[in-house]
Every structure is written in structure tokens, then in C-alpha cells.
Image (cartoon, rainbow, N blue to C red; front, side, top):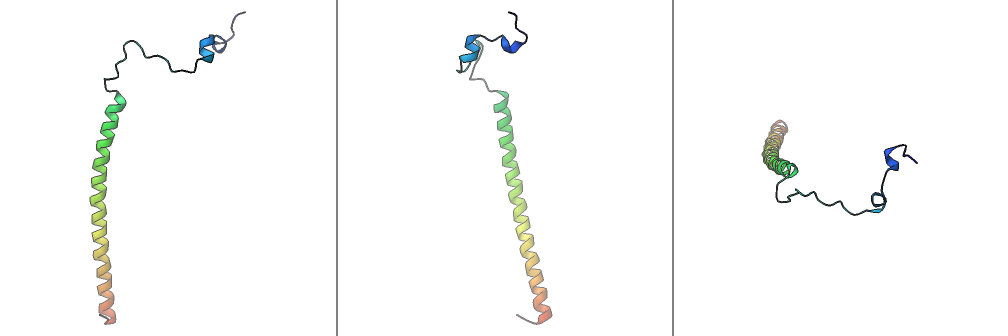
Length: 82
């Protein structure tokens, strides 16, 4: 009986073996993969982003503080309150 598609051509081991496949003969875990390389670059980018965001938030905080006090001073000048 000939198989009509590739799904029917599986061996007993393919159907019942749920263990991991063995590593190829030329596998070397000590070499860095492209994933490791890009993970390192992304990590460095996050450090730069964090420092830029931190300095930006300091500027926003300072600007809001100065703006709030400017409005407060204008209110006190117009109402004569101290």
C-alpha cells in the first residue's frame, strides 16, 4: 500500500519518541550565537534609553515645578495674598 501524502510516511520512532533530538556532530555550545550577539546589543540600547528617559523626566519635573510656582506667584500678585 503506497502512502498518499508525507504524513502517512512516519516511522514508529517518529510517532512515539517525545525526547529531544540529538545535537549534530559539529555542534559547539561555546560559540556565541546570533541571538546572544543581538541580545547584548539590545541590552546596551536599553541602558542608553533608560539614561535618556531619566534625564528627560528630570527636565519635565523641573519645568513643571517652575511653571507651577510662576502661576502661584501670578495668583498671589493679583489677589494680594501672601
